[in-house]
Amino acid sequence: MKREVVMKRKATKRANPFYVLLVLVGLTFLVTACAYGVMAFTDVAVSASGEQLSPNGLNAFMDRHGMVTLLVQVVLLGLFAVAAMGTDEYWQRVDARSDQPADETNKSDDHSNSER
Image (cartoon, rainbow, N blue to C red):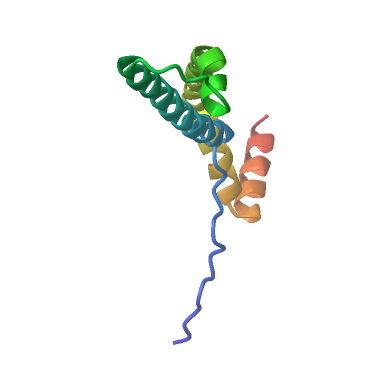
């Protein structure tokens, strides 16, 4: 008896692009929130000691624009989360179609055309 080895091509699944954006914005939010926390902690520590410290660099940016930056990132996180969940089924269907061999796809197309 002859054994046939069926080689299946490795299915490459496409990632939902909104999940990628969600991770990137989430990481950016994490860094921004940490920087904002460090800025706030530094301000409290300096105020308690009675010293005057002029903000510079990242602390100055976070002092002026930190809250707006965090709010924009939270809105983006919400939008990308809704978009990722809303399009998840679509990307699963695209992956399922790409996993089917070409012969099966053509047979199903021929069958659906003959019924019409």
